[in-house]
Length: 296
Image (cartoon, rainbow, N blue to C red):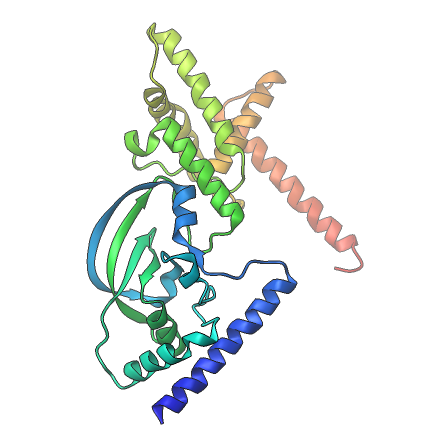
């Protein structure tokens, strides 16, 4: 009886995977399990350590560390995408339902998310059964740049930019607490220019060649951090959802330079208020436009 139910649930899960694949094709999205190799190539591998055997939440299992051929057997929701998986999938299903003890799966943990090394079928079945957790041997992975759970092409590019920025500045070593996450591409290049400018003036002040890593740490302490404290003081992230602190730093410094060039009072505080005024005007202009739009 359990075998029949297992086959029925497999067919149902595979049909869901098929529908998702059709939808992805129609919208020209790639519907495949996220590969850890692609993430590490972008974010930059720093090291690994054994995290022990533990229960991990299934909704945090987001990708695969296996070879491409194996990873392609499942879609991003770990639904079976290939009919040849049926026999093994149903055997594992029956074992789980009957309470048989199965070995832990093997996973890499990266930024509180997990990538399966071995155990794709067990994850797929456990999700199909509505389980919340699964037993796993965990290897913790550290990268230069952080990554999230839903990593699309743009997110990988941003992680790649951040990884290259950290590799150049070494801020992840000199200031481990620093998290300069930008939501838009190209901003790390702009921040690096600020650091290079800071390095130049630091060298003039001290009469020596300042190493870039030292200059980056000084910039973080004396330029970046004071502006971030101001952003937090005025709770700007609450007023501008979708932005990050590093995004706001870039925009504040842009307006700081603009005010200086215009001969107006300049500095972080006036620049921040100029940004907020600009954002407020834009918000009310969008509201007026929506009211005038007969389709809204």
